[in-house]
Structure formats: C-alpha cells, structure tokens
Length: 278
Ligand SMILES: O=C(O)CCC(=O)C(=O)O
Ligand SMILES: [Fe+2]
Image 1 (cartoon, helix red, strand yellow):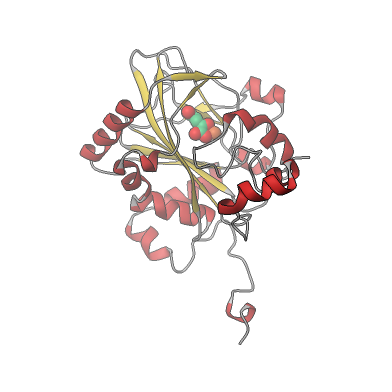
Image 2 (spheres, helix red, strand yellow):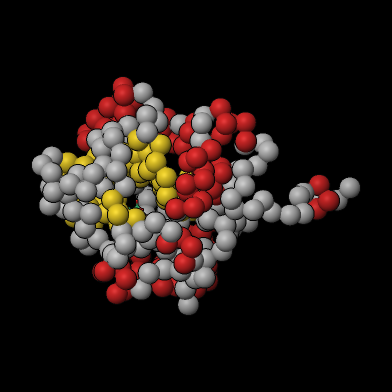
C-alpha cells in the first residue's frame, strides 16, 4: 500500500463536522455555534470557562500588557505562551479547540497569542479580514480563525469588536473606501468570560471604547496547516544568508513579519501583506 492510498482522496466540505469531531461538538453543545460561524462568519460562546479562570486571565494580561499605541492600534504583547501558563490553559480550552478544529481543520496551528488593553477613547481602526496575507478570491475553506477571549464584556460602549455579518461570503479583502465606511458593521455583544470568534474572511474592526476603564482581551489566532513550509532551515539561516545574500533572507522568511521567535514583526507588515498579493 502506498502513502497516498492510505490518505483520504476527498476534502470535508467547509460546513461539515467530521465524524471524529461530531461527538465532542455534541457533548459540548456547540452545534449551533458551528452553524452560526458558517452562516454569519462569526459566533460567540458564553461561560467558556470558570469565572475564576477568566479573572486570572484578566489579571495576568493587566500585569503583563501595557497599553501602547502602534499606528493607531492599541498593540498587545506577543508570544504570550512564554510569559505565563494561563495562556496555554486558555488556548487548550476544550470549546475553543473544538471550534478551531471544525473551522480550520484537525491539524490547525496556533498562529498568535496576544492581548490588548484598550483604555477609554482608544481602539478604532479600519475594517479588515484576518487572512491579510492570503490573495483573493479566498478559498471556500476558512484558513484562519481568530478568537477574542473577552474578559470583561463587549458592548458598543465597551469597545466591542464590530463585524459585518455574512461578509466572509464575499471572499475578498475590503478596499480602502470599505475599510473606512465600515458599512453594515455591528458590535458583537457578550458578557465577561466569553469567547467571540470570526472566520478569516469576515470583515471586522474594533470600535472606540467609550466607557471608562479598560477593555482587556486575549486574541488567539489559529491557522490551517496548508501552506506550512516543508523544510525548516532556521538553525542554518544565518550561514545560508551570509553565503547567498538578501535573496536568501527573503526565501527563509527573514524579511517578513511571520513565524518570528519574537512575535509579529510590525516593521515588515506592509511589505508582508503586499508581497503576498502580487
Ligand atoms: O480588537 C478588536 O476588537 C479586534 C481585533 C482584531 O482585529 C483581531 O484580533 O483580529
Ligand atoms: Fe482582525
């Protein structure tokens, strides 16, 4: 028997729950959440963990993450799995993992674990789809699922993430005018200790926080494994770049923002997004 005859020769349709995952989805009561994610492009799970865990997560974020401004966006701290075990507990939450497996496949990968602390008056930036470095038209399968663990509640006044329901079906990035207009965007409302999630094609943004105090959110993004590279040269990259120069740096991912041991490299962001589309 060859390798290929042992693998499946089809692909599970994007709206179907696999036979292997179905008992977990049923046990956790997530059928409607899966349906909403497919139909609307976003979904919410309330009471995702214990109130004690939610409070521990919130306090840890407040201890580690300072509100800072980066290009109009309140930037969070990256690489949080290394900063406190509470983040590992958050990303292995059974409901979160089941939704990620449903949406971005059983072999999904953690792409980013970051957090934001957004004070009053901050938090407005343009509409986008999180599959920022994927060319359009987007595939029928979702390639990225983002969760926000909402530790202290989302409402329009609290600076909720806003989303355009159904926009994932357009299968493209918003243009500059659409980014600014934010037409059809509604706040995702939920109590503390909820996770909200959206499809990588869904157009969304944050909204300015009007209420006093801070919005404390952990952002967790999960990628389908599809385009992961086969060979890992990271241990030899310096030598290879010294021998072959800057073209080699680009081929080994040193000139883009991704797969970096220090977290997302903001200084390469514009180049990364543009290089992926042309
Ligand atoms: O902060 C927000 O409300 C949205 C952030 C966002 O765009 C994301 O996590 O992908
Ligand atoms: Fe986003």
